[in-house]
Length: 184
Image (cartoon, rainbow, N blue to C red):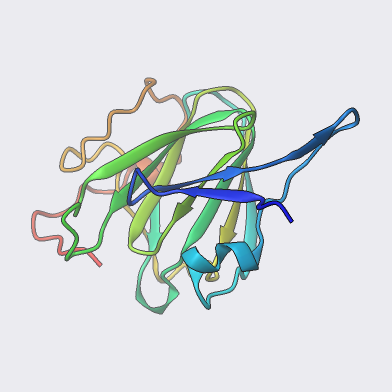
């Protein structure tokens, strides 16, 4: 049987996942996740939660979110409608990429997803109106361990492609990281 996924690791630590659809005159079929094929990324972990995010307006930023403690999670993020500028920040204290950001474009027509391992904050900016994303998580949302890095933090200096429009108060009002931030 033909592989349904191609894991592209050249942009480490951000791993792109190229989905291989099956197409015919009726349309196409795509697998979004397969435990057997994803074992090389998530190992013995299981997907325990699947979330859908809908964002109405272009230039909206969501993020930069992560979890700490025993609820750190891996994520597979897929854009199923529209286009987004997808961003991760490396928060691993011993990483050579500590506090560096990496990005890629997720486009519903390009069949690309991203794998985001634990130890990274994640967010995105919509490049079109009416964007929809699906998230596969290896741990449950835990409000006590949920953290945010301000998407405009000068210590990170993300180069967002559009001037931001709509923002959540929770994301916008988050203080910048402290100079003593040691990572996770």
